[in-house]
View 1 (tube, rainbow, N blue to C red):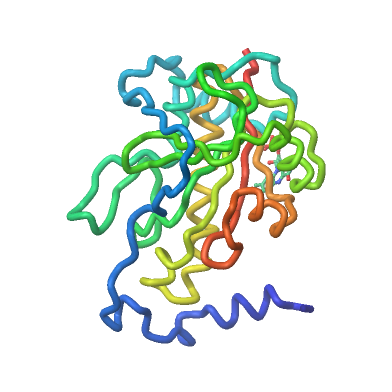
View 2 (cartoon, rainbow, N blue to C red):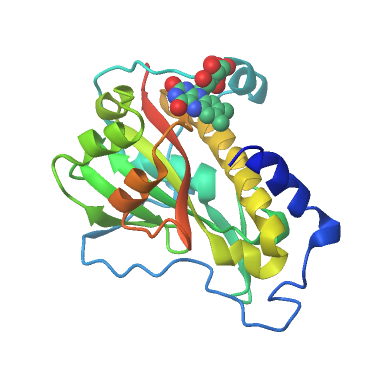
Length: 245
Ligand SMILES: Cc1cc2nc3c(=O)[nH]c(=O)nc-3n(C[C@H](O)[C@H](O)[C@H](O)COP(=O)(O)O)c2cc1C
């Protein structure tokens, strides 16, 4: 395992890449992982209808900071709609082949899926949800009343994940990226998610919230809580959000 990172970087250089499945004419995977659960599906308010604070770009960038202590107050479902739009909102779908969103993505692959740990969101029960970006809806994934404890434990017992209003959990649907880029695609999905998290940090301030990125987690534990296999789809990154004013 020593120097595995260095080996990864070396072996994913352009010169070592094999023709990707796209180059070999293989069909493209779907734009979103199908929702097969039987939880509640909730329509979210259209993002353009959600009123948010006017904040200058300069203030949003300079005010961004990681906050781990929040007010004990709920995030409204409309505010969550805005945050989901800011992080993964679909602006345009082109011939069912690719999407343009509020964030960039290598080759417009957009291989991320967003899960939400809702601890205190007005209008929905606490639990684990998924964002269905193509239709701007939420879908229930796991209503276990202990789910927040389990997610916090998987994230090396970072307690603020139990005390905040909502946590974004981003996963990669690997083949959506590797279909086009092969092994180098693994680099790009990690880069993509950084853009997403930064948008969350910036947008959170427009709804009286702050965020904190979380990269410390036990992969297997978190993937199994999300109900994903850890190979074809796995957790990349999280960010806690809570009210600050
Ligand atoms: C990739 C990444 C992973 C991080 N993981 C954690 C984490 O697991 N727990 C945490 O409390 N903060 C985490 N942070 C937040 C950093 O600690 C924070 O960004 C840093 O201390 C600088 O503070 P600032 O964001 O307020 O400027 C992470 C940040 C990044 C970018």
